[in-house]
Amino acid sequence: MNTNNLNKLQIQTEPETITDKESVVYPNPVEGVLNVELYKNNESQASIVVFNTMGQVVFQAKKQFSKGANQTQIDFTKYTPGLYILRVKDAQGEKQFKVIKK
Image (tube, rainbow, N blue to C red):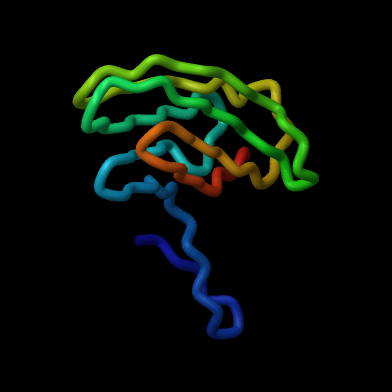
């Protein structure tokens, strides 16, 4: 991991991949297309929403996911640099991820 020592404050400068047991969101920070990989225990329809820091919806879609591994992409090229919240909600629950747009 590359770090910069700025008055003993460690700053991570490498891209980060956000993962949990059933989800992978990368690259983060994102410049172009954000990849969202989800594992589903059964077939379901999910709501995918991206919010900016003011709480405004900047992207919204409904996707049908099959049982097992699924992938979808979100084009971030049209968004201004900053912090965004990605929310994926379906019958299994809701997950939120912080995404940084470069």
